[in-house]
Length: 251
Image 1 (cartoon, helix red, strand yellow):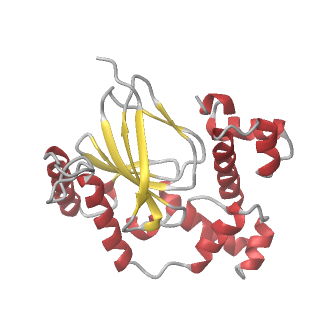
Image 2: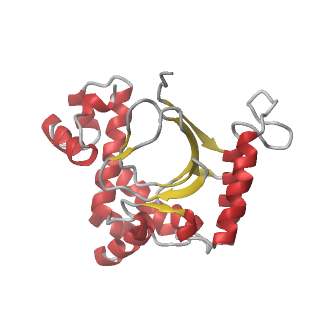
Image 3: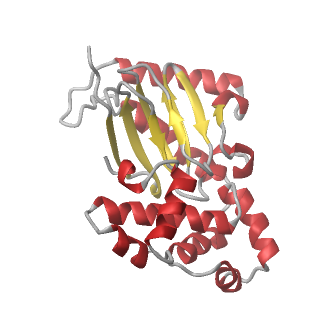
């Protein structure tokens, strides 16, 4: 049987802008995951693991037809859920049991397997008891929300850093806006995002460029509106971070 790569994502109502939910069914080849500044909590193949913030593209392997469901936490949110600074997970795929108590992870894994195995009957594939195709993702959302409620209040500087860098402001401008020296900003960024603000700015700009290119914007215009010096600069950055030309990422 031939399997086609299938990917879906949708916003998390319980978590608001702090996470999106996604599901993927593996196709015949590897899936290229482009750096996005995010941390993911993933369930699949009867195991729970964490994908840390990437500094380069990651090729996710899986048997054709294998399925995963995950939460992608917005930059800076993952540490509050997972309980470890983001730099400890940078470019890593780590079993959740390495971060949380074994018994807690085992119970959650059993509940996820039950939620995924039992068929839902509602219009969105979720039964009255929360089971079905989206039952597993809803369980992950509930667990993440509980941990966020028990975490320390979020650092307001984290959101301001993301907003400033996403808006194309320089690291110096962002540091001044949040009242931190550049060294302090670097330390805070390592803990919150997994890497320093300069790398975060590159990653966020790459994703803005991809969003623009996916709606058909010409590459030269993409470079101009997302802050690259020119199209050649855009091409170099895409290759450096994603490992392939921009056109290939859009196919």
